[in-house]
Image 1 (cartoon, helix red, strand yellow):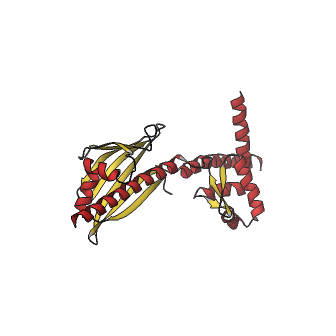
Image 2: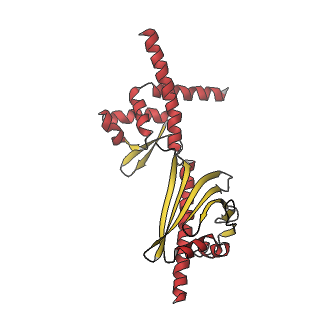
Image 3: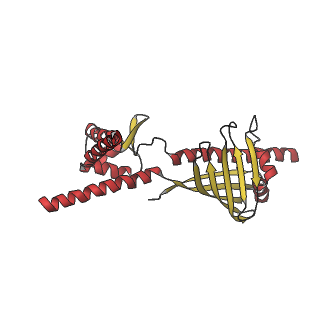
Length: 151
Length: 115
């Protein structure tokens, strides 16, 4: 049984892996495509320091009071094939979630298949299971004791 | 004092719920993931009504939650209906969709201007 959840997404994009990799990692280009679908700009901050150990930060949200921040630290930079980062997300309430992100760029039919795998989300059902089982186990031990003592 | 009393009541209910082997096996099954009442009833050979009573005891003890999904009732471990991890996954799903949508539109527009 795994103790974490992961998120997987893929998209076929009409450009070469080099073009996609560069557009994805370049701060100025990010500002363009990140908010290209917004009626009002929802992104307030983008910073990219593309080197191993460098950070990429995006701050965005529906309003100034509801801003989400995501900081990714680059672990592997393999242009134009692969990017591995550690992502720290924080929501307006101050809750923080640390996950691992792997983005790959594969040439496919003249375009690029961009795949995202984000892993490390703790699985609460699993956590609850172990908590519950600890109780169940305790109960079984008590039961075994009673059987031994009084049977 | 009040808090201690509440905790004791809660523990009494939880241990009472756990004192039954059928209910313990339901919890073990739910450890693998949420299940509908009929999925839980199947391996035990119990009727839905009989099983529902056990699930009700577990729910009263806050060991499981139930939710109506379509025509069946789904049972899962724990008390948090939408737990933290799921909220974050939903949130990131929107973020990545937005990123991929943005890139797609960006390149599609660029392709259009190249021609």
